Structure formats: structure tokens, C-alpha cells
Image (tube, rainbow, N blue to C red):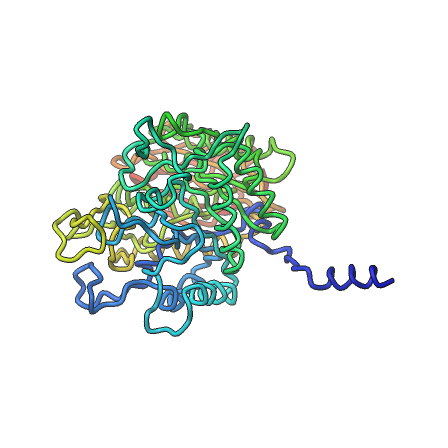
Length: 504
């Protein structure tokens, strides 16, 4: 009897996880994810020179809370926090060091702490996550793939070394060193235990998942065991792999390589796909084929899997620079209408070009051994204390809000509806429909960012002349004929139409 009572007591105090946990949301394509760098997320650049200097306040967990209502208002329900762990200062890049040059697995980066607060670093991070949860915003925390040189000096057992016992620089990532992961036969237990400490920390903080940076360079067994370790603590904890079907080799010949499909078998819930290649795709078939490829891939697993729409990430040049504001607008509406999880990086929603006037110039002050403001041109700054992402493009901002409001208002159609590719007579024009319970939208876009397309014919089976079309997005210039729509598209234009009482 006493044993039964003990079991009942233990059961009562076990953590419970709601059906609307992040993993469930993600697998049902209902996560709308914004990637943020806390270090500049709500930085206070008083003199507007783009840098956060000694008399100004950089981004931290406390002032970050002030921006949560802004994100909630436009429909964001998940934040991806770029790494919050301490960063290396030796052989560094930038005056603050890259947030991906991890120097500890189980501590909070002191750069992200409000020094005026009496709360501990852990308490400040937890407060931020709690405030996210109050607004129904889930939180993913980034797990860096490589270690800082500082960590190599203090813990060389975690790293691959050459014959001279020197650390290995993967590809051109000069500020980090390659971890010694082991392989599927024998893991490096020291590194595995360090990763378990990271998982313990982020669960204790209340995070809802992790994004594994360059997940491909750790073996299948490493992830399989770590994911199982995590799921015993929280079955709703999301594992998102930075991995792409277009990645074919590791960043170092000494690194392991586990392709995207094996990572999904290991227990990852989703991966990046190759949607970031949209900027280079010349023909509509490349976009449509990639959507079809992902749907087929994700349906091939016995358990649910999904993917993020990684058109724009912190590794990608701003869409504004690549193809202008029309490209950004196209991305917003594709994010809003495709059958996967939207993802974008902070600043995209306002058209930030991430062009910093001080980039790669000599620094006056630095806290690393790099005395230059190192920056990747056109990409979110992850190396210095810099201004918060804040573009000034009102057209991009308006379309972003309209697109994500549309997705929110048509949640079932987007997350559950059928996806049907539609044929067009122009190789650079894509078209597809989404249908659910008699509601249908048609999305048509021109991947030629320099030239308009005239008299485009989009074939829509069983469409009749009398059907009423409502233009959700785009110019109102179309003609309905039997089984087709005829229209013009400006360069880089995307159009979204609704057809009443019609399903494909």
C-alpha cells in the first residue's frame, strides 16, 4: 500500500506537457519563428552611429522583454535565440567575439546580462523566457557546433588535434576549433557529457527546444543518445537541425558527416532544407520541385517531421541587397502560404540591409584580441556590440504584417490544406494552390527580378469563368477563362488570389 501511495505521489509531481508544446506546434507547421541575437536585439544606440559604446546599453535579457509585445503583435509564436553561452576572446572575430565561439556549455554569456539588475545571470535569462511564455511565445536556444580557442586551451580533450597536438580550424571559421565527437562506434564521452550539461541548463531555464548549429558534423549516435536523454525530461522539447539536403561534405576532412536524412532518423524533428537557394533559382520548377521533395521526404518517416522555410537566416545576405524590396515581399508571402514552418531573422520584417558604416574598420575599443569591427557584409552582426536590427522600408514592413496576419487568419488552410503545383507557360513563373474544406488560394510569382512577364497562362483544372476571385496580394489584372487564369506580373511580383467555393 505504501509503495502504491509513493508511486501515486511521484506521478502527481511529474512535469506535464500541453498539447500545444513547441514540438507539436512545429510538427503541425504552426511555429512562426524569428531568430534573434540578444546582444543587439534591443540595444540602445543613443548617438545613432550604429555601435553600442561604453555609455550606451547593449542588448540584454532584461531590455529584450520590451520588444516581445512588438513580435507577438505580428504573429510570432517562437523565438530562436542565437547562442547565449559565453564567447571566446582569443583568436576571435570582432570586438565582442562571435556568439558561435562557445567557451562554456553550462553558463550564461555575461555580455547578455543587465548589470543594473540584482538578478543572477540565470535568473535574468529565465525571466526573459518566462515573459515569452506569458505571451504564448516559445523559445529555442542555439547550440554552437564548434568551440572557441579559449575552450581548447582549458579543455583540450574536447577537441580534434593534429600530429603536433594543435587544434583544427574547420573550413574558414578561424575563430573556432573542431570538436572531437567520436563516431558511431565510440563517442567522446567528455564532449557528450558537456552537451548534456547544456541541455540540463536550457531545460532549467525553461526553453522549449534547441537549434543545433551545423548538426551534420556530429555522428548519428551522438544525436540519437542526446535526443533520447532530452525527451525523457521533456517529450515536447524540439530538436531543429541546421542541415540542408544540398550539403554534401563536412567543413573539415577530420569532421564526421551525418546527412540531413540520417539526422531526422536520429530523432531531429526538422531541418533547414535549401530554401535559402531561392535567390539563385532561375526557373520556377526549382522552387516547386524543392517543395515536393520536402513533402515526400518528411512523409517517408514513421513519425511526423517538418522543415523551416529558411529563405533568410543570419548566414544569408539581406534579401534587400540580393534582389530588392520585391524579393523581401515575395519571401514574406511564400512564408505565409507554404506548408512548412515560417522562419526569418530579426530585421527582415522591416527591410534591414545589415550594412554597417563602421564594418571592418579599425576599432577604438575591443574586449577580444581582434581590434577590427569584423562583419559579414549584408548579414546580421554577430561579432560586435551593435545597434538593434531596424530597417526603414515601410513597404516591406506592411507586406510582412499583412502576410503573417493572412497566415494567422487562415491557419487551418495553411497548416492542413492540400498543396497542388499549377502549370504555367513561363519558365520563371511559379504557381501553386492551397485548398481546405472548400477554400482555395492560388499563389503566383515571377522569379525574374529584372523583367516583367506578360500574358501568363496559369492552368487551373475545373475552373469556370463564373468563379469569383478575390485578390489578397498583388495587382488586380487578370482574366478568367475555362481551366485557366491569364495575367501579367511585374518583375519579382507575387500574387495571392482566393477562389470562393472551389477546391483542387
